[in-house]
Structure formats: structure tokens, C-alpha cells
Image (cartoon, rainbow, N blue to C red; front, side, top):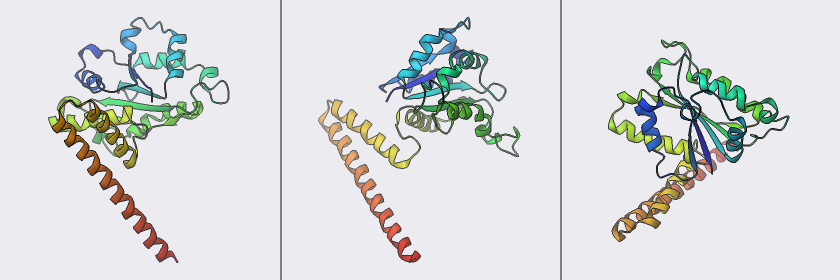
Length: 235
């Protein structure tokens, strides 16, 4: 799977959050980090080149800090220039149909405030509705937005969870399902085991894989038993 991450951040060179997220991609294959502010400081966007990258990707992610309940200006300019009606709309040329669209949004205000009744008075899902509408018009599969909640206040443990969750969102073909996450972890462990030079560490990795697969099989069996019981009750 090929993932294109399109980043819009006017102060990206000074952003610890973006540096962390970029570092999280170091060992992932098939992921392209595309910074708009570095590429187009003059806002003169190469439409043909951008469209070519979009066509080559399976998953497209817009990544940005929340600026007044929306994305920074350059990403909006990019949308206006690149996502032309003929190129985008599924009932016309529809070059994006069947692809996935994800959103990674970083917050300076606590995520808990973005709820109906919270201090912001609106949810992140509501704020991301315009992107969801674009995905619908393009015939794309819209992924639930991935929220980075005030990175600079996170503990080491929270950052470790963020690293895993971000990699999963970017690189996992099925990031929203439990089985998809299990299969993705197993695949990554297998890849690491195949490249591990130390025999003891390789053995430990293989044992870990075996345990995860065993747990997965036991869970599937338990689900089957529950379904049988439910069918029996219905009858």
C-alpha cells in the first residue's frame, strides 16, 4: 500500500509535533512525506505534479494543525488548485475513486473541549465534515480523523502510544478494525524477525508472533461460540 501524507504547517521547521510524526515513519515502507510549505513557499502549486502523486497513492492523508477550526491557508489553496472538478468528481474523470482519505489534525487546545457542550462547542468530526464531503464527491473511503492531542504536554508513555497509533493509521490497510491491527502487528514483527541478526532476539520475536496468533484464534473461537448461543436463544 502506498500512502501520501500531505502536510500543511506554516511553522513546520519549529514544530516538535511534526518532527515526531515524521520520525515515526522512519522504518515504514511505501509512505511519502510531502510538505506543502517547504515545496511551495510562494503558493505557486504545480498542479500536474500534485495530481500525479495523488493518482499513484492508495491512501491520501491531509495533516495539519487546527487553525481557527479549519486547515491552514496553503492546504485550502492546494485543494482549490489541485482538486479540479473533472479530476476529482467520481461522476466525471474521477481519478481518486476507490482511494482512502484520512485526516491527521494536531490540537493546541485539549481534545476534550471539542464536544457539543464543551468550551469549543463543536466536535472534531463536525469540523472535518468538508473533507468528508470531498471524499464522498470523489468516491473515496473517508477514514475517521486521527487527533493528536496537545503533543507537548504528553508523557513518554502517551507518546509511545501515539507513535504506534500514528503508524497504524498511516500504514495499516485496515486501521480501524481490531483484526486489521493484529494482522498489521504480526506482519511487522515477521519483517523484523526476518532481518534480526541475533538468534535469541529472533526466537523471542517468533514466540511473540505465535502468541498473538494463538490469542487471535482463541478470540475467533470465542466469538463463534457466542454467535451459536445467540442463534440458539433466537430460535
